[in-house]
Image (cartoon, rainbow over all chains, first blue to last red; front, side):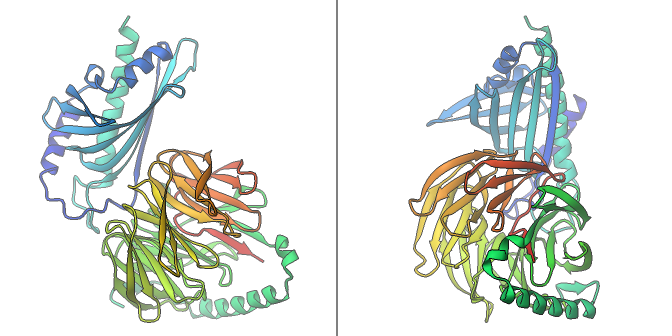
Length: 178
Length: 335
């Protein structure tokens, strides 16, 4: 948790740097994490697909503000440490139990994030597996040398930390809730 | 020359290329079309996440070899007549040159920039390299190699294609939302064509009459008539990346990165006739004219989907390497 808070503070300071170019980095980064939850898939999916209540299970998030703009749905996650992330819902597929979203703007040290969360049945009876996948680019948008804090490793760590803490707590919340 | 340093200066390679080219031309002349099925083809797949290239033998649809290259390989260009494959390693800022006779890296060309897209001229004399950050395209002689020239283009140049008559180089400028048409003789921009937002991949038909730009942010493809520059826009899936046109120029295949699918468009009616589920986050796509298949590199699932262009069914899924991209025309025909 402290790690996430420190990271969010760092990302806030990075976001104050001028945006020098519009092209994103040349190599997309990938983080894929899974957790097994001893809870019914339908119940876990109900939590995951509720786009406006992420603060109930995602650590470090103080509140979620849901907005409708025309037919599109957006949310703003406000971090307890300061900073925020503005996300667009790309789709909810109840058949495959998959939610897709993207980051529009925010204070995380990365750009062009597209992600999905998928709930599958199993491996055991009454169990669920949640897989969280993100594709994104580092913050630095020019040729090397790449400044510290704007490189691939920083971007990957930011997402690793959020996914790890998020899935661990989603498991806890799902397994303890009635 | 200041942007190009040559690590290995291989005169023997140049002589060998010349010999191979003569041999290849001779083979083409004496080989009747009915024997085309005796040719084989290989798919060269760049794996960004493990700095390798997977070589797929299309006869077996399996990886026959994995070649270590530079860091973050993305773009690719192949030459059957020279028996060479060029790989753009964007993170280590260099081009790996592979001799396809023994699939070994024989040269490394240092680039003072971020090489992403690659294309060869039809005569194989010139390799064009798109520099993603410096907004330039470099022209490199494949013979020695030496720098022939460079030109400033639009913002974030990505996909490249050269017309069959070798007169025009087409460049997709992702962040200026246009295609630059470059006179290859003078290496100067003749015209710019506005397309949809963020064009990334480019595909040119065998005749050179149809140019397709894949517009990532617009979720569309622009079909450009290269004679009149008239264009038509067709909506495809979410965040499309690359496209490939069948040899008979009847169908267009488009990879939709965020939909995990390939859209198949009938080029006569301009309608999507099928959306095919493939692996996760499909990027590069190329046609294999010998087996009449489309090969699709799936960045998210680290594999390649093989689609029969007649039945529009997925024939096989081949495990490759971490983060397969294969940006460019990556099928090598081999006599």
